[in-house]
Length: 103
Image 1 (cartoon, rainbow, N blue to C red):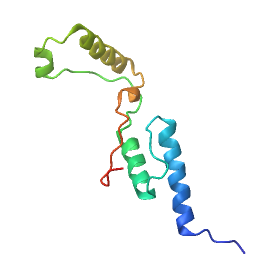
Image 2 (image 1 turned 30 degrees about the vertical axis):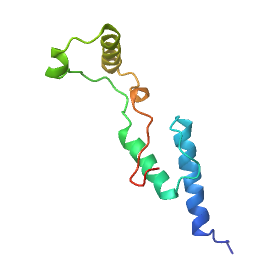
Image 3 (image 1 turned 60 degrees about the vertical axis):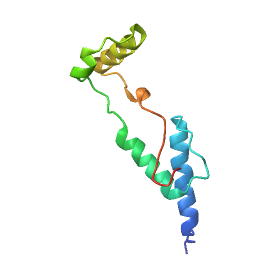
C-alpha cells in the first residue's frame, strides 16, 4: 500500500520548488512565502517572459520627439539592436515580484 502525503506537505514541496526556480533567476523570493503566493509569482514571471526571436521595433511619437541624454539613448539603441537580432530580452525585465497579498 502506498502512503499518502499530507496535503500541506505537498503544498510546501510545491512552494519550495517554485521559490527555488524564481530565486535561481534572481527574483529574491522569501522561502517562507505562502504556497499560493509562490504559485502566483511564478505564473506572473512565466507570463511576462519574452520568447526568443527577432522582432521589429518602433518608438512612440512621444519618445521619438524627445532628445534623450546620450547614455540613455545608447541603452535604448542597444535594446533595439538586441530585439532586431532576436537576442534574449528577459534580462531587461524587472526582477520585482508582486502579488495581491504583498509578498
